[in-house]
Length: 547
Image (cartoon, rainbow, N blue to C red):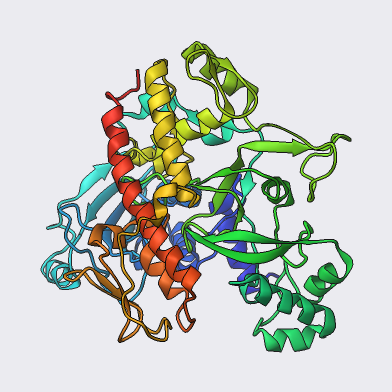
């Protein structure tokens, strides 16, 4: 006989069928409550369910079968989206502040599911939304009922059954572009460390000290010393110790957050020191290489296609804390003389080839009227190379008008790259993308022309980070600050992270070195230039669709 948890899990299978997703987030308690309530209504044949819950199910990509199932069961569904997600950091459509009705980070919705006796689905889906301050939402809710709210009836389509309005005016145009996974031959999601306290460190010296501890201490001592908690299904202290003791590994840097490199240890073994080291991708990035990083779903962030570049591997939280795992698309793949691809360490006889799908290269070459070369850059008159393609794509994906025009589609899948037949436009965009690459890899020669100051001597200890917009200062303690930091740069985000804020807060309690202070000021320069170049990219583009 099934216990309660097994029975609920069985019910949830209706929400998970045929999703073909690597990661399915459908085990939250609120989803279990909705599924149980749905089952009860199915038994009685009529009734009403009313919930105030996390609103992720109304537009989440992995919730599409859940929405389909609800439409099949009920005759009317009412969704009042109260927004308020601090994770998505949305503002109201008029640019004003949007707040949660509760003291939580997740956005909220009120949902009514109605099943009339004798009637069958699909349900009619009604939608309304509230933006603004908590007080304004309370005021509206207190004087409203289901009859007074202005509902808009949606027509959810089979591709996603979304319970939110969608503007698909440019869908046909957008779908002509190449999806990023179709452009590249090899790609994978970022690494999962499982236990950052043991596996990720600010300095190489700290990591080396940890590796020494692993070799000399027993698993329980390590667990207590590093506050590791219980083992999980994909990682254990004993397995991590065994991996370090028995495997040949390499100390390397990892992109932990935007503009924030840390240190870790790669052996390439799943379930070892790192839970999921993604050896196929990581091995490629231990060679001289770069990779495009993007996420499959932008999780509702408006007008934003999240793309970054790295010359290191990444962690699965390097672009969003909870809203999306980055996928890495290396520029080149390395193969040894014995045809072994993705080896962990460089070997004699290793060669590299562009990691671009032949079909894509052929299509783009024919459209441009250029011949593809297999390494580096072409002259954009007769030839183009893999680096030109990377730079061109990077520029397009950073175009504000691209993000705005295709916002609806960027929320639900990898970005698509429109191709151009205009050689001059291709060259101009590739040049802008190259500038962004140099900035985001912190290799641009202009980065040491600081726009900020750090004028006050002191402990350099990050105690409490606070920003004063009127004075353009970000304080790290009561006496010391970075001065001359404009508000638009302070607020600039890469992925779901407000870079200038996040970098400092991650170092709370630490003493900033001279290199740390210089690094922070270089990042500010990079962000300022990024804002400028993004605007310049839109000036280069004559219109949409691209000619």
